[in-house]
Image 1 (cartoon, helix red, strand yellow):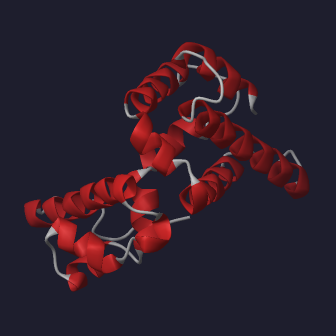
Image 2 (spheres, one colour; image 1 turned 120 degrees about the horizontal axis):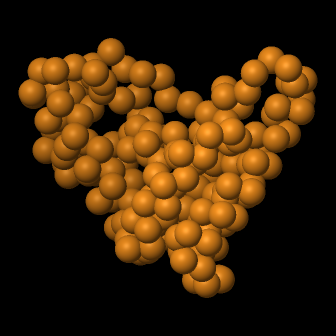
Image 3 (cartoon, helix red, strand yellow; image 1 turned 60 degrees about the vertical axis):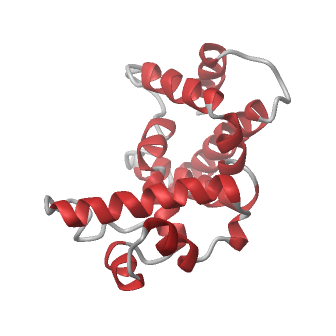
Length: 174
């Protein structure tokens, strides 16, 4: 999973602007190119920042991808207990449905594998110590794979469901 970079929480407007430009460039490139074809050069050109500026904020393109997905990962990593996060999940799914073309790109191929690993790691970190490590790992793998697969197949049109119904199915992938 990505490490929090020291500049990530900066209040300096230039730092914030550059970071936002890099993240926006990644989102745009996701919809245009296959993951293997996206280069750091593409990102810095699109963001209109220097390569050194890029590396002040991120360690590589995977780091940018995961940073752009942090709020989504936080929502999808929720497991049991308080389901107040469900409204956030429904809004997220409605956003994916409205942006199906981009969502298909995000949840396809190698990008999906990167996101699934990050989701697994985030879910694993949310467990308490009352369950064995092996059991926690298996639950985290199952949950991440199930949730990503549901979203991927839904935005591909493999089954029909509204965001509310899909949220119910995702909540069951725990």
